[in-house]
Length: 213
Image (tube, rainbow, N blue to C red; front, side, top):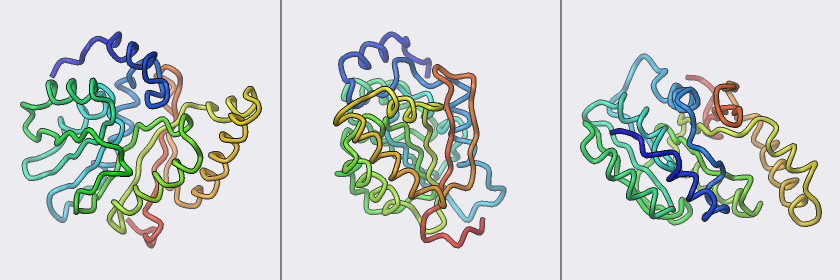
């Protein structure tokens, strides 16, 4: 389960700028912060069903599989074929090996709903209309009491909105409006300075949730 060289991720970040949102994999500190909400519940009603989106080379996947128990289910949706190869090589022998799906989240139809969705998608890179559809699809895939965990680079979108012009600035502005509309769903924020660049983890509840844990 040894991690691949970060240079492999860096190469893909240069080649696939629209779908790879960073130049370096997530740090161990960020990966642990991302999975903490998944395993924070003391009581289980049964096996966990977890969906990870945009796994890259698997820093968050590693933290998930190291904590999952027999009977749990982990599905990983990753659009980059190179990263899919890495994920299958790294975690195929895990106690709870993930099912890796080389597909867009918008086209992913597992036939089940998940207790937790964890996302590393670089939403700031996408058209605003696609971002809106991705959020809608994620909430469709969540159980009514489910949690959606994602991260963003600290001040990243605000800086992009300030220093971009024309259509790019308009796109970022629309994404910020979408994010603002989802603020009532946020139940936890955690800043992770030990990442390149520093990041913020956001935990949202399903919009149909009563807010009770």
